[in-house]
Length: 260
Image (tube, rainbow, N blue to C red):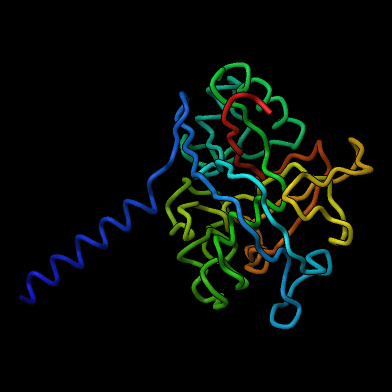
C-alpha cells in the first residue's frame, strides 16, 4: 500500500510539474507564451510590511479586463537574431536573455516580428500586466513569499549570478508557469515612467499620458547585477528609451488576431 501511495504522489507531482511548465502557445520562431487570465490585484508594495521605494506607492487595486498571453521566458538571443539578424548582447548564449537592447530597439523588433508573423500581434506588456503576471495571485514581497533567503531558487541576482546572465528557465517558475520574473535581466514595459502611482490606470492599460520620446520607461523584475530588493514583485527601475545595458531585456505579450 505504501508503495502505491508513493507512486501516486510521484505521478501527481510529475503532472503538476508538467502543468506548471507547459506553455499555452509557441510561435514559429519558438517563443513560448502562457495564457494569463483576467482578474484583479493590488499593485505596488504594502508599506505596512515591505521595505522599498516611494515610486512603488500608493498601493492600488487594478483589474485586468482581458486575458492575455505573456512570454514564458525573457526573449532569448536566438529569438532576437532570428528576427533582427545580429546579436548585441554582452553575455553570449543562444538561450541567454538578449540584453544591450533599448526600449527603442525593442519597438523595431516588435515591428519586424509582427510583419513576419501574420497570425499574431506582439507588444510589450503594460506595467500593471507585468506585475499582475509576476505576482501570480500572491500579495507577498516576492512571488514565492516574504523570505529573501529563498530568492536563490527563483532568481539570478547579484548574490548568485557570478556577474552575468544565465540561460532562461533554469530557476523555479512562479505559480503561473512564468520563469525569471525575478532576476536575470530587468524587463522593459510599455509605459512611460512616473515617480508614483497617483493617477495610474486601474484597468491594466498602458500609462502613457503626457508622455514623450525623451521620458524614461519602467523596467521590472531586477537583474543579475542588482540587489535582492529589486527582485520583489513591486520593484521598479527606469531608464531612457535609447539606453543600452547588459542588465536589461524584455518579454512580450501575444495578442491573438484580429489585430488590436
